[in-house]
Length: 200
Ligand code: MN3
Image (cartoon, rainbow, N blue to C red; front, side, top):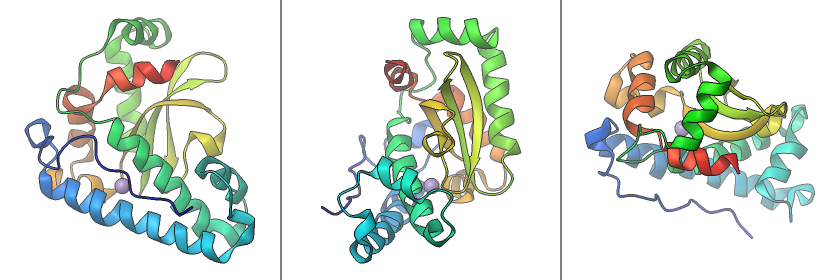
């Protein structure tokens, strides 16, 4: 079965008041994400080794295989964007109690968490992602991955919250100001309820 572009969990103009314009969402979801899905389906169609595998299985199968780098990148980006749309909400930025307590326990304070996440997001050179993960040691950490990679591929832990820091995700609304885009995400757009639910 072919992979499909998921429907956004809100309308394309729903996040404008929180700093992500309709233009950004239409391009990012309708063009960029769609392109990853189309490319991935093209690779699966031509490669029997990929057929019948879940998205996560394709990411793990393709990683570290030079000839499957385009498969890895497009499968990773499909997974990353499915996560990302759910990591955004028009009423974002409010930390629910259980997640806030865990953040304070592992980072020391909410501000220390935000600083660590901002550092990960702004020091990812070029395209990539910043993540809040529940590490394999049971502690939260802020991390980053390049291009289409993600914590599934790196084995760093369970993803709670991811932020796209490719230029296509912020250039319309924030131009070159990636730090402002990251701060806006953490304070206004981040769906911490979703992140808390991912704690399990
Ligand atoms: Mn993107």
